[in-house]
Image 1 (cartoon, helix red, strand yellow):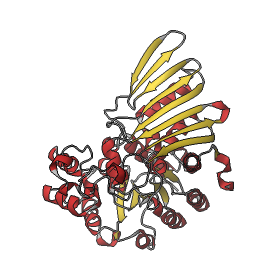
Image 2 (cartoon, helix red, strand yellow):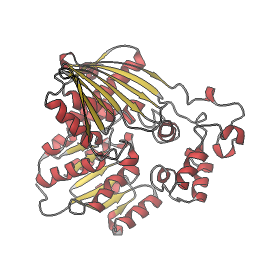
Image 3 (cartoon, rainbow, N blue to C red):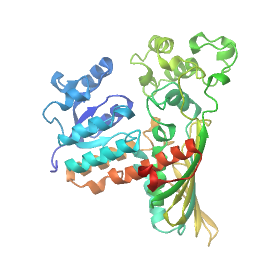
Image 4 (cartoon, one colour):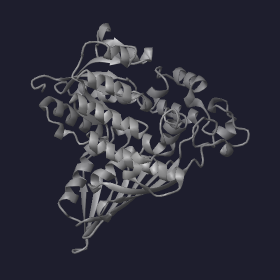
Amino acid sequence: MTTLGRPVELLILGAGSRGQTYAEYTLTHPRDGLVVGVAEPDPVRRAAFAERFHLPPERVFADWQEALAQPKLADVAVIATQDADHVAPVEAAASRGYHLLLEKPMAPDEAGCRRIVAAAEKAGVMLGVCHVLRYTAYTQALRDVLDAGTIGQIVSVEHLEPVGYWHQAHSFVRGHWRNTQESSPMLLAKSCHDLDWLRYLVGKPCLRVSSFGSLKHFRAAEQPPGAAKRCLYCPPEIESACAYSAKRYYLGQLEIGNTGWPLNVITDDITRNGVIEALRDGPYGRCVYACDNDVVDHQVANFEFEGGVTASFTMTAFTRARGRETRIFGTRGEIYGDSQTIQIYDFLTETTTTLDTAVASDGSILSGHGGGDDGLMKAFLNAVRQGNPALILSGPEETLQSHLMVFAAERARTEGRVVAVNDLARL
């Protein structure tokens, strides 16, 4: 069934940062999509979302169970609940005939991922996973260069994800994705984007993985003597010398006029008093050396793909904010990319060609992932409108394969051995 001639209707399950981002697309592209309902447990966030999207009370729900207990309300269920709470709403929504747009990662474990794929297949609905990096102009330009054979056959790849010291502190030390048991491992929560991206560029199945990494810095042993458990109460001489001061960072964001992410994550009251209250009472005001985080702050992984192609991946917290950087080595040339520009060196002519993908972005969440957020929404809504799942670049099987790479890498890291991806289901 297609929706030609009208906007695709969306039911948002989870109105946090990512759910709001996908919903916002419909405000700037009303011919493509229309938000018709929301389920969100936080009452303040729920009310604000309902007001912004002009939703009547009967289309506003306290949780996804209540929303999916109603007769079918929309064409698509956008599932942006927390990582560990993806499988059940996917299965429920699929069984009611909703097409599914699912925030990454699919699920924290292989069994959950396979249940999600099975639910979509059984119901005959489309499933798109929000691996937004596939949808950027930069990625598509890079794929065009590779597909044209400009550097010959890919032999090896080096890829860097510079998470950024402030992003690490916000999301993976103080925030929702700090603890493996409450969320998922760092490589899944943050870097499944990148492993999926590598799989997309190489275009071949991954066979074997090795990995190393640890939590080196954001732990009690690194806390300066005399530091407080909260930045607001830290002695000035210590707080002023700390690169991870919540007081300086969040109040600084307010001072430069940023009222979106990450301030809208720590509080619904985007004022100086509201931010200070959040830092005094909420999780984001904690000292980075006095949190309950356990995810790694640096990790490397090595991948062997079919045909002998190899790739190395580095994720590290200890960088300035900037785009991901990649080097691709081929039989006829090499490529360097920084999430916007692509430099191509040709072995035969010994010349360098530079392509600028004209995306004024560093590829981060603040910039809509270099246009990937909008690209994802456009592609997925067009797929639903036309009844054509081929328009979805991050479908169920592709996404499952890249998630298996993540699980293999995490097993390799924790067990100190090389893991064969195809052996995961038998372990």
